[in-house]
Length: 293
View 1 (cartoon, helix red, strand yellow):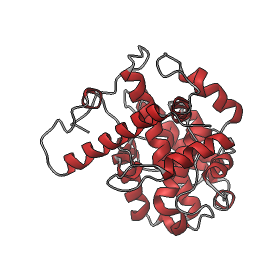
View 2: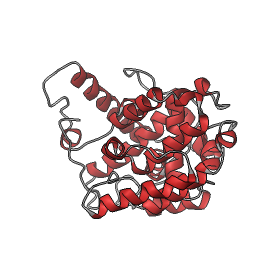
View 3: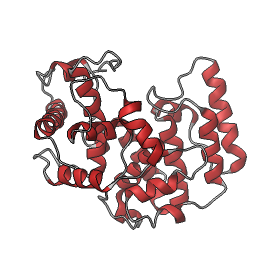
């Protein structure tokens, strides 16, 4: 699988400029922090996943609760958080205890809040509280960290997490990314700190643009360019995808700090949306920037 140099240059230009925006903002410069009109008008997450506010919040919770020394409690908390991905929900309702008796009570409380108009999850994440409850009950009944920790890389770890009832590949990718943000070696993960990781729908579509699998000037829905293929193979990567990701990892430009494979997957997903906005894809809604984030 050969990378298309023109598209790769566009990807790295986006990554570099988004990273500069974060650096300029952190330095206290006056907005706008870029002349790129699409980045100015839209919200894109940081290129380093660990720098995003939600990730920083859950990492602080992990440290405060000393979950590094409690693998099953850590896995349970990360699954609960990522299936909803909204800090305000956990600040208001807390985390459920890792006990099968309380998993459904907690999700029922969230459901009642939703009926009263409370937004329990982020727009881009899970809306089915039933699936959240199923996943949490399943994990509360098992010591499943013993199955995830020995995985040889992020792809295998995602595959093992997809066996959790109600979870699925997308949320499994988020949870594995969080485990690696805590630190693979710190947690004793067999995969180490920077293993190859699975691709979500948006990042797989972006990689296909970079390798010529999609005409970059046409409006191709994710569900045709990546989603069905992703469903057929779920979490796996073929050899060509692994080679392309490795090449991107090795050829990354100088940024505020190096990108891990998790960061590259994260950035591919954001660039997929950025690319569609540049070509005027009418199906892509805008996520308006909040407070210059």
